[in-house]
Image 1 (cartoon, chains in turn cyan, brown):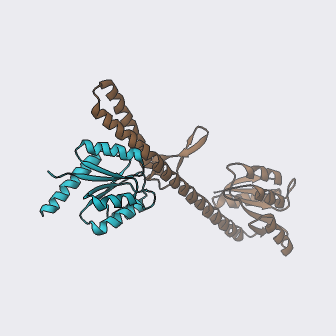
Image 2: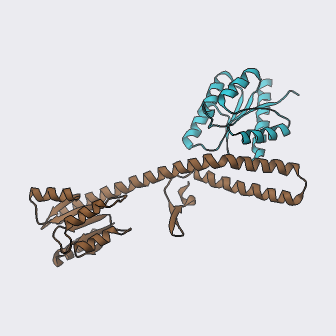
Image 3: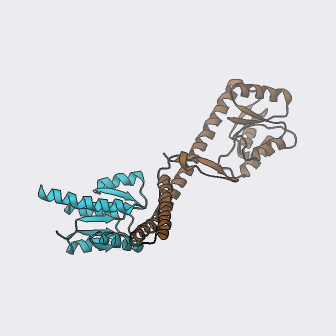
Amino acid sequence: MTEKKILVVDDEVAILNMLKRVFSKEGYTVRSAESAEEAIEILKHDRIHVMFLDLNLPGMTGVELCRQLRKKRPMDIIYAVTGYVSLFELAECREAGFDDYFHKPVELEELLNAAQDAFKKIERWKKR
Amino acid sequence: MRILIAEDEFTSHRILRAVLTKWNYDVVSAHDGSEAWEKLQREDAPKLAVLDWMMPKMDGLEVCYKLRQMEKTIPTYIILLTARDSKKDIVKGFEAGADDYIAKPFDNNELRARINAGRRIVELQASLVEKDKLQGVIEMAGAVNHELNQPMQVISGLSELLLDSLDDNHIKEDLKEIKAQVKSMGEITRKLTRITRYKTKSYLTSKIIDLDSAAE
């Protein structure tokens, strides 16, 4: 079985650490970034196809990051995890290309299910 | 809608009261200027006022002037009732802060039309104030969500991790309770994001947003 890698992006270190523990415990390899810029840097070297992005990041926002990544990575599974979005921004999330969105505080089980789904989906597409 | 009439002259007062009541206004009476001033200062004062210019104790002009010194979210719409209709007097009335005037003896249709115009303005201002308030509430709801959901996520996530790694049942029960409480806090912040109306409920001596009827 190949290594299952997840990228988590959040400017709040406490959340990053918590999510790292959660996903590692389930056997995923986790990379984390505190900003969109850092995330882009990581993605240059690491082959990661499942991501959880916070929307409100310093510098480039999670929405912009997703929009930019989507251009070159149509098959990746990108999730938004956010403290606050208005209805208008929710529409923008869809348009930017997020596969799904989670509102904090979210149950860890929901995130784990999402990760599981993401890898299943990627598998299906690979098989055709 | 409530309307105040300030008129010292008995017959004129009675006629005004009768026609306004017929037009479905809820009339608040004052028989001199200081009574009018006292009633218009109240928290629940009528937003529309018909003031006679010439009144004992305090004339209509002075009431106008004093009202305009007050800070009101919705300024009282004032119609001056006057026997004086020289241009100079009319200008003086407007300068004191009146919104409109009507010359005595007045024609009922004209009075009605002028009061209706005032009513439209008061209603428009009230709806603008509501919109402003709603906007403020929505911004506050956004800030609360943004600030509180982060720490709540950490508390609930860490509680869950601890639950998985601990064996002590008493501690586990406590952790479950902590998680349940954070979950209900999350439901409150979620409700805040759905606010579309400005609705309040009374709370002790003041008002608070009524989350259940303000959110869709």
